[in-house]
Amino acid sequence: MGYSIAPLERLTEQLERLPGVGRKSAARLAFHLLYMPQAEAKALQDAVADAREKICECPVCCNLTDTSPCAICGDSRRDASVICVVEDPRDVLAIERTREYHGLYHVLHGLISPMDGIGADQLCIKELLARLGDGEVKEVIMEDERVTEVIMATNPTVEGDYTAVYLSRLLKPLHIKVTRLAYGIPVGADLEYADEVTLSRSLEGRSEL
Ligand code: ZN
Image (cartoon, rainbow, N blue to C red; front, side):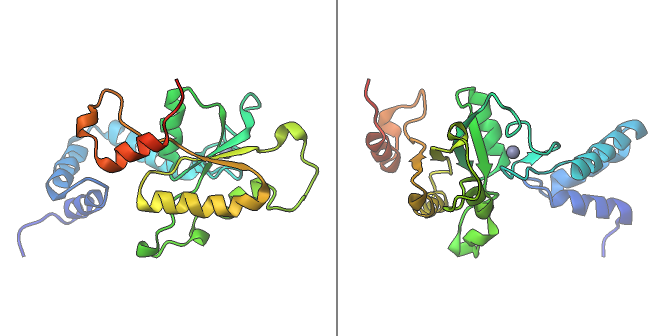
């Protein structure tokens, strides 16, 4: 057993569990935290505790939030007739950055993946169905509050496509328009270097000029 300082070793091990942090980076971060002024270390500790304590899932859209419902669900200026379904809260931030979308969201917190043993019941799918009325008329829904379109904005991967198709089948009996994000050539890219799957999807999703 080599020389080690137990608390430092423990801190390094915890940091190493963070995504993208290897053994060397973890050790560097651990030393950085040790040499930090006490007040800064305390601020970091408080920020972690505060975020863990105050952030929860929105009861409507399942996005992470510190208010209930979240700021998007609670904003009456947003178009409540469209729901954009995403895998992860980070996808909401990405779409919001475009400033192009003004509807609501629904966060699944994962994708269906038979390979990894992740089934539909482990995702926030029943919450989505509850928002769409579950096929039954539970209460009188005002005409202007009715959801008329659900956009599947899951990633163009095997799991993302599978989840989108699965959901679109579930929603079909509800007579709601289900759309999928168009995928294509990245802006500024060269057609010559696009792979054939991207290129064929771009052709399928072409739009009129
Ligand atoms: Zn919400």
